[in-house]
Each structure stands twice: as structure tokens, then as C-alpha cells.
Image 1: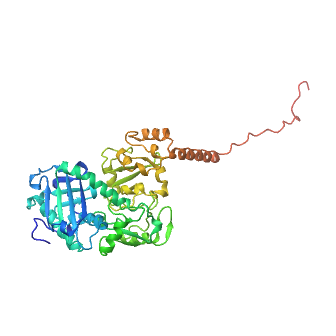
Image 2 (image 1 turned 180 degrees about the vertical axis):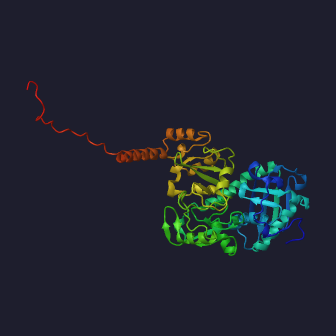
Image 3 (image 1 turned 90 degrees about the vertical axis):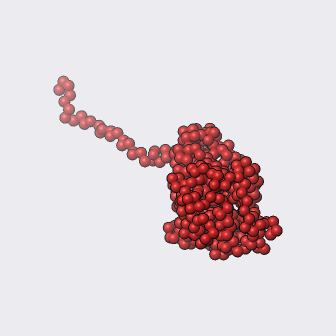
Length: 439
């Protein structure tokens, strides 16, 4: 596609997986840190095509190692506005996967990249051609970007310093939808960015449900569909409401059939068990049902240890992702915890029993005050027995449900007991014909 780069560049490479044995280096991901950010700037503040690197370049990195990476892009143009930042940012995943020998996963501060041994052998020895190719694709596919400049950072201290500010930017973006709800709009938005890795994924973004990756809210979807109508974000007519609690709509169901190639025909936006939203693999958090206790736990990418069910995030993500609709597992974006409709069809926060402490702390202001102390963390419970003891101690709402279920089961058992037959009472013994003494 472009002869000036030391790699092939084509959409045909989307979905390319680079396994550990084929990997030269790994960037960011679960073993390190990083982020990607797009910032709208004035025209005179952007050096078109400019590239700056803070930290070590590829040629200075050792095979088999993991390094931090931040990618920061400044964009400018007459039609460029801050509302487009998140949309442009999310396309970094799209365009970098056009590069043969580079695998890009996830978004925001969860990015995870691998560069293959073959790419290094073919002459890739710097981040600059990666940045230049990415910017070229952005400008080709999104013509409203007139100027674009890249800053890549591999210095860990510099990334730590910038990451604090970057997370505040993400939070400010997410806060915009807090006062807008599903019932206030007629249009939702769909996104197909993850379909290169999850072909049947149906990502629906509504005011009360952010994208699974956490990078696109309803306003972002609207802005993207406006500037790039043929792009991966597009309008979905909401249609008639079938189930206001579960969040089922005729328009979403029609989109589900189309986007999943007929694999799924129903999706409820706010249900965990009944026709749940599909999960792509880029989700920030995975929810898991614990049938022994009838509660739902949640675990994010930053928690490496097993959850009380004995499984790690990686274990559960493998079962949940791929664009599947899996009852008992559900991928979500972190901001969905803040939604007033958070899994409301299945009890909302009253059904949540466990989550890592750092994740709970992050959303603690949005957990109802009457349940916040009853949601366990790894400091309270590490297995099912200790979790059950904690829930009982804190009088979690699910405990009352256990008792109610036990009482109903006991009553049913009593009703189903076979009736005990009454003991037969013998008739009076006839005296006639019985010999009498002395006769």
C-alpha cells in the first residue's frame, strides 16, 4: 500500500495475532503501562507529519522484553473539534492493525501491542515509520484531519507523569452523558471496530451504556457518524421499546441480526442473563456469575490474581470474548458501573458481591450507600467460602434472597410429601361362636 515503509500496509492484516513465540517485543499491556490519546489543537500548533520520541527506540530494545508505550496525537483542521477526539483515538486500533507484523489491542490506558520477529527482520527498527504510517491512514480515511503530529513515549517516568492528566481527560469525556438517558433519545449508535477480532460482535452505544472498550460514549458515536457516515460508528434507530427494564428495542434487535450475520436476534442492553449484550474482547471489565451464591462478581484487566471463582481475568476473557453472547459472563466498559440502568434487569448493584479493591475504589461514589459496604474485595474474600461468610456478616441483600428461596423450597417440600395413610381401626370382634370358659 505504501512503498516508503519497511512493512506491508493493508486492511488484510486486521485480525493478525502475534503469539508469544513469534513476538520480538511487547508494549504496554498487562505487564507494563501505556495509553493512547488524541488532542484537538489549533492549526498553527501542529507540525503536520511531525514525530517526536521520548525514551528508547525499537533499535534499543531487547528481544522478548516488555516496555511501556504512550502514543499521543495532535490533530487540527477546520472541522476538527474536541468532540471528535475519542473517535479519532479509537481508530488508532483500526489503523495500526493494518501494519503487517504489529498487533494492537484495546484502548485508552489498556493498550497492548506486540511487534513480530519477522517485522524486525524485514527492517523495522524505529517507532517513526509506525507513527508516520498511522498518521497517513488517519488523514486518508478521515479527511477532516488536515494536520496531524505524533509524540510517542517509552520513558516510564514520563508516562507516569502524563498518565495522571490523561485519566482526568478520559473521566471528563465520560461525565458528559451522566444526565442523558436511553429514554431521552431516538437514536443509539453501533460500532464495528472490533469485528476484525470478534466477527459477530454487536456493540451498541446508548446514553446509559458506554461501549465495551470504554472509549466511545453516545456523544462520541453521534460525532463520528456525522463526520464519517460510512465509518465504523453509525446510527441505529432505537425503535419500539419491548422491555424497558432489560433495555430491549426493536431497532437494536434488527441491528443485532445484521451485525452478527444472523447469529443473534435479540439483545437486552441492561440484562446479565437474558439475551445479554455480546462481548468482543476489548472490554474493560468482565462480569461472572457465581451460582453457588447467586451473586455476580466483576474483574478488570489490572487484577492479575484469581477471583473467588478460581479464574483470572485472562481465563474469563477467553471464554467471554470473540463477539459471543455468553449467559453467565458479560464484558462491559467501566463507565457502565455509573449508569442508573446498570444490569437493572438482574438486580443492579444488589446483585454484585465481589470486585477488586482498586476497581471498587474507582467507582465507589456511584455504588448505592446501602450496598457499598456489602460488596467484597480481595481484602475480604478470596474464595467462595470466605465470600459467603462476608456476605452474611454484612447482611448483603442476596442473603435475604437465600432465606426466601430456602423457605419456598421447604414449603414446596412439605406440600410434596406423600400423605401418611391413617391406621386401620379394626371392627368390633364378634362374640358369637367364640367359646366361653366353663361352657
